[in-house]
Amino acid sequence: MQKIDKIVLKETKYIAVWVLIFSVLMQAVFLVIGQWDYTVLLGNLLSATVSLANFLAMGITVQKAVQKEEKEAKQTMKASGMIRTFGMFIVLLVGVLLPQCFHLLTLIIPLIFPRIAVAIRPLWDKQKPSTKEGSENET
Image (cartoon, rainbow, N blue to C red; front, side, top):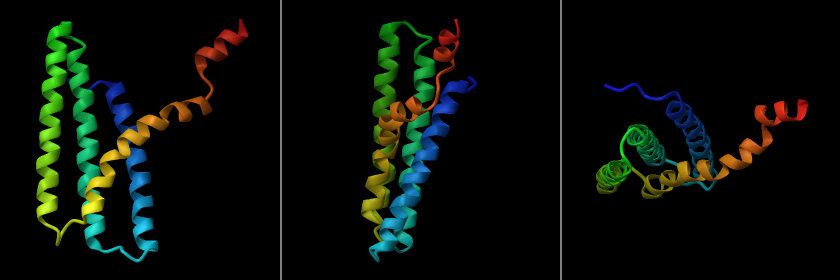
């Protein structure tokens, strides 16, 4: 079995932190509006786990694909995307079919948390001074 690249792990940890932050915020919103119950928590846990697992699987696939020829890499990425999407669909379908256990909105909303985290990444990186820029300014 191939070892997971440090960059894949680093990016997955970054996404995990934001998924956790957004999940806590979502739980707080449901609590404030008086709609919180255990199904909100369970739905959030299931969907957040699925979205994070999907991101990690995508990272591992990219790691493997960069070692292949372009055509084979594209096929690998396409197949992985289909398999990951199908897997997420099946898990979420189970959640939808068990409304006594999982709140529908909390099954759907956390799926976009990784996308939001990726979208705000450039804003987050601008706040940190770049070591490359710092070394250029010194010369």
